[in-house]
Length: 288
Image: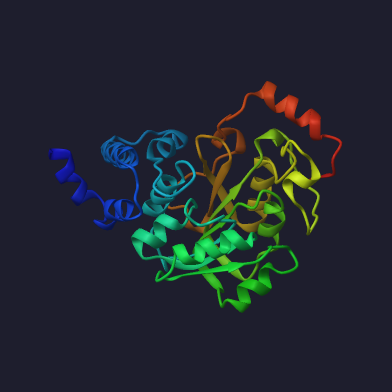
């Protein structure tokens, strides 16, 4: 009982009500309560000198795929929030993405872009009445800045998230109409230890090029080099080892710049990485 009373003080009252509204099962409600309890305990735990460990402890999932909701929350507690604006590229139906918690529970606004028409339509219904615009567009180097200009998303925003299982590296490299304080980009663990990304192909489709799906995206090392050129520092990865978090160097405010080796979690073993890369090494890559 004491914990249930505590829940009301710790989180926006709409969170549990929202979950019940969308007919979540009792099991999932219980899961959410456990997540919040763990979050509360971690909030009160003494911070480690190890930044990677601190981020791992802060992970929690409300709408994100894994613990990204917690990592995002922790970053903005460290650096502060300025305008609560975001852009997220690659959201599927919008129910499990990196910005949903921000818009549905904390009043953020922004642009969601999804290539799949059916998923985009589902997302539009899901976010109806929220300060979020969902558009259906296949993002390429050739159109991303035009999309941002057309939607009047310009200048500084708090967050950019890219997860398109393909040209993620090339899209971030090309974006110049917005200046995000925090950037989240998915990386491909199969490329671990190599400064490479797939060669740019505007029509890239992950499972069309190679049936295993191992050929897509970019390595963490390549992303970190790109981040350096754009003025960002790697501060964390999710503990399953596929999402990277970058903060503008001018905004770090106590967060430390980490190397790929310091930040990465080996979600798959080195042996498995070697096996997977053998299957795709003949395909076109670009060294960075």
